[in-house]
Image 1 (cartoon, helix red, strand yellow):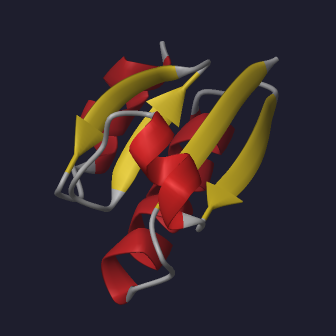
Image 2: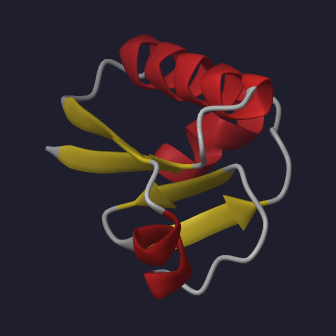
Length: 77
């Protein structure tokens, strides 16, 4: 099971990234757990300074923008 984390304070881009990550995981038919990390200290512990950010299994894949769904699929694979 993949652990997908969305780092962000809950802004529109953070919500969009969460939606796209869930959609990508469903389209790839992979089991996943989605967690939204909103605490700034927790976000900074990942070394992320700009949000939103996508973390897959503890590895920061992208920060500071919302990628296309095809790019998210590649990050999840």
